[in-house]
Length: 366
Image (cartoon, rainbow, N blue to C red; front, side):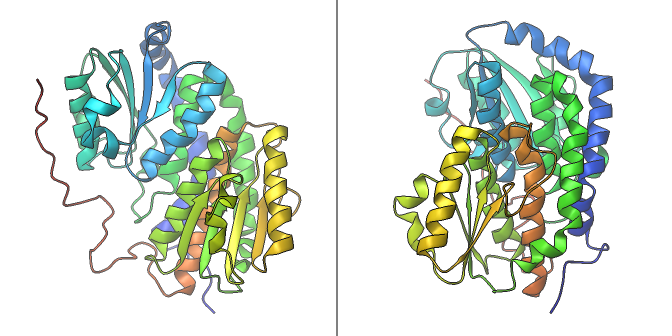
């Protein structure tokens, strides 16, 4: 039976480079941090500022994770808003007449909605400032904001501009970048995160072995910041298997309200273990319930049955950075076993690395 892709696969290489990429990001922020803090400080001093985290697809899930995490630590309004929602309904999503700090995530920065989101925000909100976090210096998003007076472009290490189909190191490094941008004092956690991810990489055989029962459905469950990671994990599996493995996501509490009906004897459920003692009780409850009532396989990631050393003292936003490695390895293993090409799961071009076919319409304003 085929095993994980060889190191010549870009996807394989980009998953494995993540610990080094995060350390490189830490060094980059040590250099650019003062300028970034100078940009952010006057904005964060404003009580009426609305911080909006935006991106499309996987980049949108960065906002879902970081928004949950940063609200807790900054104690202020921080909200995820996908570019696909912002562009389609700017008058609704930005209806409040408040100044906005729009934090845009983009691996390539060339998705049609990326630039469109920054433009329609300028049309609708009374005042907009832009923090662009991207992996591609030549992308449209980076170029348009490089010299803009109310913009700051944070270019990530060049290696994170993934060339594989699915976002892997670009996702985790952009997530870590935004968490450290708003909480620079937490740069000391990078080694712990890198060590945790390395431990998962060293156990890639264990991760792949979860596919031995040939599950036809995989469910990821997570609460708080890990809810966004559950969604990203499900998408990664769909992308790399070209949709041949059905993937679902939910919260441990929400799963009981109907979605649990997808579980059968060929379903793998992965519960993303929270580091919060209170939230972790709900994780443990759904694990126990599923193991008692259903024949499928249940994995409690980051807990006793699949521990990840080094994460115990980290909040769930940071835990998500490292735990993403598990989902990437599982998706890669499933892709190879099914005979897909991880770097190009859709050779017919029906789904593309950078989305195509999006027509941006002019926004009529009163």
